[in-house]
Amino acid sequence: MEKTYHGSCHCGAVTFEADLDLSQPTYRCNCSICRRTRFWPAIARAGQFRLLTGQAELTQYLFNTRKNQHYFCKHCGVRCFGIGTETPSGLMYGVNLGCLDDVSDTELAQAPITYVDGRDEHWDRPPAVFAHL
Image (cartoon, rainbow, N blue to C red; front, side, top):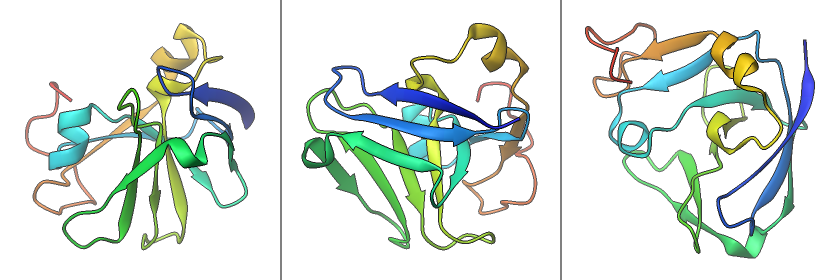
């Protein structure tokens, strides 16, 4: 069931809201950036993510194919969200569940996790080892 969640970076300079259904898959990936930042996203489609404050406080990081936009607060360094511009389902926002201010521990514990092997670009299957993700 879709619900509107509110979130922020650690210092509060960036705030957002997103309409998410946490009964749908969330993702843990072993690619270089997700592994290093411990990024745990739920997916919001266009129109389901709204940046409320802090546009000027964000810094963008692009790498590899430069198709996905990774945003970080330039003050505290927290990665609240990213934008996938070329995905099988079109434009999407990856909303970091760790940045949601009003999600319960129970909701997080019950959110299904899909593990993906981004390191080897096998997006359709989990890596051989994923317990550490």
